[in-house]
Amino acid sequence: MIPRFKPTLGIQELLAALHPARSDDIEQFENDFAHLMGQKHALAFAYGRTGMIHLLKAIGLENKEIICPSYTCIVVPHAIVFSGNRPVFVDCAEGGFNMDLDKVEKAITPKTGAIISTSLFGYPVDLDRLSILQHKYPHISIIQDCAHSYGAEWNGIQIQQAGIAAVFGLNISKMITSIFGGMVTTNDSTLFKKLSVLRNQSSQKVNRTKSLRRFAYLLSCYPVFWEPIYGLVNWLERKHFIDHFVKYYDELLIDMPDDYQEQMTAIEARVGRANINHYFDRVKSCRQAAHMYFDRLGNRIDMILPPQIHGATYSHFVVRVKDPDYWLKKATRKGIQLGWIIEYNIPEVQAYGCHSPQTFPVSAEYSRSAINLPVWGGEKLADRICRLFEND
Ligand SMILES: *Cc1c(COP(=O)(O)O)cnc(C)c1O
Image 1 (cartoon, rainbow, N blue to C red):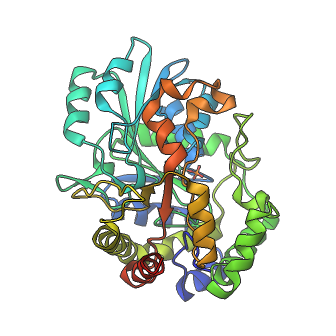
Image 2 (image 1 turned 90 degrees about the horizontal axis):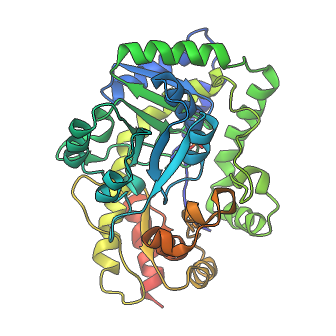
């Protein structure tokens, strides 16, 4: 079975993992990452969400309203809550996946401390409009959630260049992976110093067992995503046997993983650093796959294709269909795993108050209709997938 996502892992990552630990493994990864992103500083964390919590604290925000999308990964508002602040949700713009910036402006109050702007699925946020907002409200910090926006550009400017800082996710579903992990980048040296102090004070050193577990996890990634084996993995996932590894939230709780305050392990840092070498090819694969999907699926009447936008990377190629379950099952029969990407509208989730779908109608609609096609294999894989659907 063709997996919905697949980390790009080669022999380099394996060798990096096996390499004896050095005291500066994490720092080296941070330096290389900062360099790649064109930023002065980068700081590694156990998860992207941990970086977000520390960043909000380092900026000095407490008891503030933090504006974030209603349609994004649920770990983002969790991080806001854990930082001692309150999320204020804003719906997507009609026809796009990012926040509606008119609605962002309407959501601003004297208590607003920051705006977390996400370039969802690799669609660049409108940096011109964000910059107008920043001039109008200079005391509000703009944070870029770059978990999906690796390589995404607005008028030739990469998203992480705008705003006070950017947060990246590095788990195995992201464009660059360090197995788990997250990164914060910034050009602001004062903020960077505060963030380093906060992180170093609160983060506990990891024990050897965890490093071994991470190594085992990495090793398992090589066979697990292999097509002949992946059918079994998919079956186990559907039967909820591997929830421990794949389920990342609980409808009822605003919580964090047990190890969220720990440091990134040295083995993760070495793997992440090696994985940077695959980055440009990876971005290219996503774009090529997306263009093939636009060409070949553009005429279908049973799915709504996502917008085609210059500067987008299509980290996820998200189409909208009437009945996602029907499509997921149909694809499974054809040997393709489609993803049901962000199948929730956060304000509707019980932990965030069970708001009615009408309150955030666009994201409510997306959460009920969005599925994603694999992009990790570039044109070759996209062609295979198109053919499977064309022979239908
Ligand atoms: C992956 C992701 C993050 C960070 O997730 P972690 O699991 O905490 O590393 C943040 N925002 C979005 C939109 C994401 O997809």
